[in-house]
Image (cartoon, rainbow, N blue to C red; front, side, top):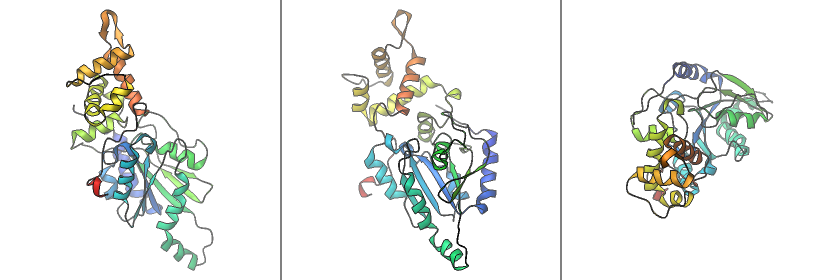
Length: 286
């Protein structure tokens, strides 16, 4: 299915990120731990090159723990620290300040040598829509300064937010990129809600999700929907799930709109199980 979404404000956001990088000491990039590769905006690497970076693998509680740890090892380097977090519950966030202090140690040492006692660390928060940026900022600030929503694209303009631990955060709107070269990437983003359902054919999306899960996580799919077997064709399995859930209309016909909503909601909420849709290269070696 063809998926493309690049609202005009995202062009502006990309320009603002480039212009404002000189104001910050480091970048915190938030990715969806279920789709670590797909939730990486390729523009961010180019824009933020040279800046110390922390990558937060958010929603890590919804993933296969072994795969998330493999991603953590794969992405870590001397200029990048990777932390598993659950921004909604605040899990893992206490590790951010020590990581920043470690990445910025040389710079802070230079400032202290010049006699500066109180050092405020300024950080830009970046990421694609709906990965939990605003939730993360609210937890760090311990209030609801940043506007949140369960729909992508809620945050539209830059904000500075102070925290009680000497870190100032610059919020930026979630930004995707103009063209998805890989259909799998586009589907992963749509499965996890990074692309608005309003512009999607959710029935087709749900069918694609069933096709993916019957290949990668058949046991979880069967267990969640109490299926004794999986058919070869995804549509047959979607129909079976609909019948189990009573998603029917008059005459016993399948209510595809309803079962699509149920399936996508339960996948996004982790109710089907802990699922990682992507693995790092050479996972057995990681």
